[in-house]
Each structure stands twice: as structure tokens, then as C-alpha cells.
Amino acid sequence: MDPRVLGAMAAPFAAAAAIYLGRRRGAEAWTYAAAGVSLALALALLPAVRAGVAPEVRLMGLLPGVDLFFRVDPLGLTFALLAAGLWVVTSVYSSGYVRAMGLENRRRYFACFAASIGCALGVAFAGNVLTFLVFYEGLTLATYPLVAHKETDAALAGARRYLAYALTGGLALTAAAAWTWMLAGTLDFVPGGFLPPRLAGGALAGLFALYAIGYGVKAAVMPLHAWLPGAMVAPTPVSALLHAVAVVKAGVFGCLRMVQYVFGPDTLSSSAAPAVLIAACGVTVVAGSIAALRQDNLKRRLAYSTVVHLSLIVLGAALLAPHGTVGAMLHMVNHGFAKITLFFCAGAIYASTHAETVSRLGGLGRHMPWTFAAFTVASLALVGFPGLCGFVGKLILARGAIEASQMVPLAILLGGSLFTAAYLLPIVRAAYFDPAPNDAVREAPGLMVGPLVATSALVVVFGALPAVINLQYELAARAAAQIFGGAP
Image 1 (spheres, rainbow, N blue to C red):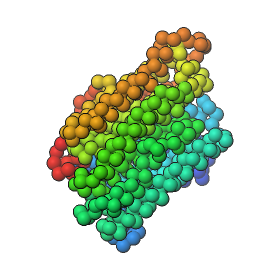
Image 2: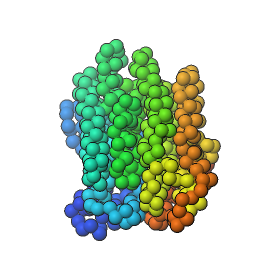
Image 3: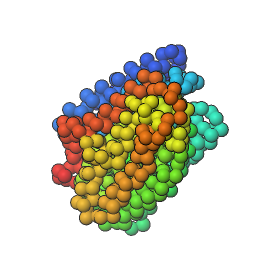
Image 4: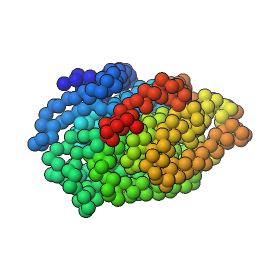
């Protein structure tokens, strides 16, 4: 039993309990302490995973042959480091946001935020389908109060829709887990899949559909995406949590687990399931991009951007190629850095100007230079500009499509970059070249600007620093080698 695994997951839950039961003034201190502990313990697992060791913890038997089981592999550690690392900067940003906006019910806010990260880490380290399901559903329950936090009619409506979609996905995943257990007698994730080789035809299609619905809701693959734009009524740090740190990333992470660790490339290669998934991703990229172009509300435009880029990650898994998996893992992380930066910028703009729409951002780049410099860097990264983190993942995804001899996914990937430029770069142009409506506009408080500068720096570091890129690639390549039986 590895105490680092339990400690990384337990710290957020302990903080959540201490925050909710303690005094209001201690909420931020508990948050900072737990975020630091979780990140430190997740980083402490890195040398073992790089050495080919998978730390494990088995706590109790839940079903015959199925334990509450945690295993840290390269894919899980990648997701865990993303969640724990971004929690640190989001905690600082949240402190600035709640002060600037006068947010009420701060103890509930910070407690639910901590519990959400704890569930995300449980998802990351889950060693089987049932353990994944427990924390996946826990993530739904922990984030629901955050979406509803403002308690306005719009917030409550958005939260109810989110809950309805997420619980429906959870029911589909529960049915899939029960069916999988009946077929295989186990639920433990295995690189390359563990379902019996005789599974084919209607049984394979039905089981794959249940998993795809279960994970596809949080991954916001169309037509399962409608909850996500509506959830943008939540406070901006919650939007960042939903899009970059926990919820939607848990969905795409689940898709990677499903394709590579439950079914496996060998089982799926003889079925139509990957083609259906690729088609769904293609529709999502095109329709989501068109929807983004039509949005004047900044956070909703960013929400549809998330819908698009999540499908690019799922697309990488559906290629059933080593570099497709590597590219999906890298883009999962790199999209997180860029998207959290964009949402941080949206919150800083609102805190300073109360502007929520794209049409009101003209000229603000000259008055909020740090915020719009970060916005520009993150936007270019999502487009795939060389030297920024988004370029690395997209380049490897493109190689994966060519490796799999699939030109349609390659066209989807390239088209997604063009669409991203179309709905993000006009914001940058207007911010710098249009006349400013109010010369009195200033930057948001330092506790908000500091984190967005820090995450935009990560966008550069993970796109330009060879040592960091190589470490990230090493983890992804190790996962792909385990799945496909050879180094990519």
C-alpha cells in the first residue's frame, strides 16, 4: 500500500471537511495547504512511474473479484498532475475572485471545490471501472453546488440541467460496469483491454454505446453537450474547474480508459465503433465551432471552444494508433493550460469592467495589458501556433491520423484549428485595435492577474522548453507502449 496515493486523494477531502465545519476565515488556508500537499504527493509518484512501477492500493472488496482499487499508471498520473497542479493556481485566483466580486457562502464554495479535486484525483488513480464510477459520480455531486452557487434562477436552471445530464450518463456507466463484470468477471483496467475476445456484434456495440454515453456526457460530445454552455452561469473559477481541471477532463479521460483499457485496440479494430466515434467527433468539431462563432457572450464562446477541443482528444483515442494516444494525452494537458488561462482572463475582465460580451471588449487590451497578453498567448496555443503548448499535441495527433491512414480525422483536426482561429483571434484584434470605451479601466486585482500570467507562462513552457516537452512525451509514450505493445 503506497501512502502517497491515498495522501494525494485524502488531502482535498480532509480540507473540504475542515472548511465546511470550521471558520470562514480558515477556508483559504485549508485550500492552499491541501493543494500543496496533493501536488507534492502526486509529483512524488513521478519517479516510480517513469521507472515502470505502478504504485497500487487495495482498500476493500466491493464485489466478488472487484475491489476499491487504485493504481497509478502513466495515463492516470498525467491527469492527476494536471488536476493537482491547476488546483494550486485556481485556489489563488479564487481568493482574488471572491474578494473582488463579494461572493457569498465562501465556506461552501471552497469546500465543494476541494471535494471536486479529491474526486478528480480518485478518477485519475482508479484501478478499475467500479472505483472510477464511484469517484466519477462523486464529482457530479461535488460540482453541482458550485454550478448553482449564485442561487439565481439561471444558476439553478443550469445546475439542474447539468445534474440531469450527468446522472443520466452515470446510469449508463453503471449499466456498462454491470455488463462488463458479467462478461469478464473483473473490472480492473488493463493496457490493451480486458474484455473477452469473443465479444462482437450487437453485444460489443451495445456495451460500447453505454460507455460512450456514460463518458460522453462529461466529455461534451454532441448531442450530449447541452449542459456545458448552460453551466457558464457559475462563478468564473468554477467555469475554469469545469473546463480545464476536473469535470470535462474526467470525461475525456474516461474515453481514453474505455477505448484503451477496457475494450482495447485489438477488439475495436474489427468493429464499427471507432468510426462512429470519429464521426461524432467530426460533427462536434464543426457544429461546436459554428456555435462558438455565433456567441457574443464570452464565457459561452469559450464553452463551445471546449466542446470542440475535447472532441479532438477523443478523436485521438478513436484512431487506435500509438501516436493518436500520445497526442490525445498531450492535448488533454495542454488544452487545460490554455483554457484555464482564457477563463481566468474572462473573470478578470468581468471583475474590472463587468463586460460579459465579446462586443464590449474593444480597446481593452491597451488598459489591461497583462490580461490580454495572456488571452492572446492562450488563444494562439489553441489554434496550434508553433512554440506554444497546443502545437505539440496537435502535431502528434496529426501524425497519429497519418499513422492510422485516416485522412478524415486529419482534416477534422486541421479544420478545428482554422475554426479556433476564426472565433478567438477576432477578440484579440478588437482588444488591441478597436477604440476603448472607457479610459478608466484598469487591471483586475493582483490575486487574479498573477494566476492568469502563471498559466499563460505554462502555455509557453510546455510548448517551448525541450525538457518539459520530453517529460510529458515520455509519460504518454510509456502509456502507448503498454497499450500497443511497443514504443511509438
